[in-house]
Image (cartoon, rainbow, N blue to C red; front, side, top):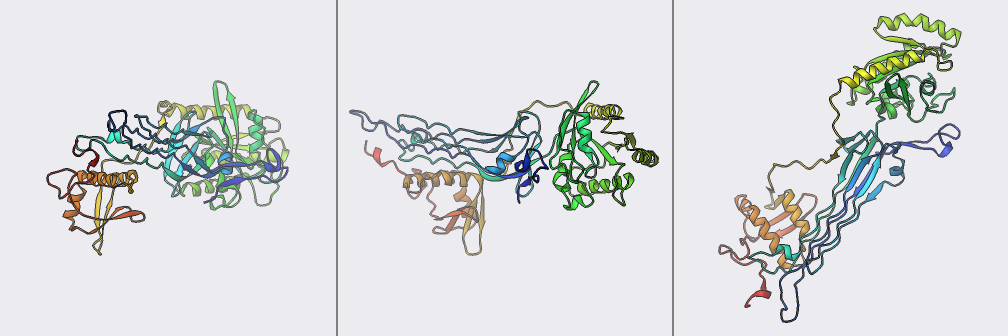
Length: 474
């Protein structure tokens, strides 16, 4: 899945040959890892074992996306697609907790959609300041002071910090505009935006002059709204021809569609009615691909370039055909500004009607999508060869926190699994002492030889896990 890059040819685009507009990138994010806890025993004169005093590890930093209205493209993430927050620091003795890692804030344009590589939408970011935590930092490990209990008075171990989220996400930019101008290349869409607003798009008489969506702000009385020019629509655009498929997403947020039809074209086989039918079929085909339907959006017809005598005659000829279809028609000239005032007020009325029908806007808020809860804490699966697999959020999380070079830490993990009911569930599934048990996932797991012993220090157990031998005999 490649990034969408539009790089104009020399002399054709904004900013010269090097100008780029990026509306789709694959971003690799890594949240900070949690710091490890500290295993420490307080020592002072005449009191060599004053009790555990190891501090907790710091939390890893989050990676957060935030809408910034001054950001117009995803170019920065195309150039640097890997972003990482800092990790938490390790805890220390004397009950000193490690410092938390620094959060990483990434700004994105208004209208950015965050998706997984499989296409699942994680967040739709609209509105200045809207935030989405795309990768959460790992929790810091507990120090031995926090792990002390009546059963384990002086733990000789601490928990490891959890790794932060690491994932690839797709960022897609969908232009936030009230009105979308659609039509064939060189129909005059960019000229229309330039005439209606203060926008200064690139304008010329060759196809695909517009290589990036142009935005303009239009004032019509008390109504202020934005207009976008969607470039590159030709027949077959929904199938990937021309530039249309790459930019069709930019009209999904528009409440009003305006067909800009060239009445002065000299291309054989083209006329305003046939151009309209072709664009409508492409819009319908694009909607059928699973994106937001466009068929029900209000429409206006703009017969452009009527300053040319032959174009005016053609506009008067085809106007009844559009009106017969129930469409409102405007004859305009972007060059002489004829008809633009009436058009701007008509678009403003349609935008105002759409806004009035919307529910009250909610305040900007932090967007977080936590994993679903309420399911089983773990599952036990048995395979045909007598192997058992333990899966679940808690067992896997505890696995990551365990220092397997420390026998007492391994015993603590066994205690936690026993309290969760893993041993009982394994026995119900037919596991016998010495059976091979995997903890994790089918792709990544650790192997243990299961020897059920109950909880450390319990009367029921066959042995003791993780005894605190340093305190025995005191």
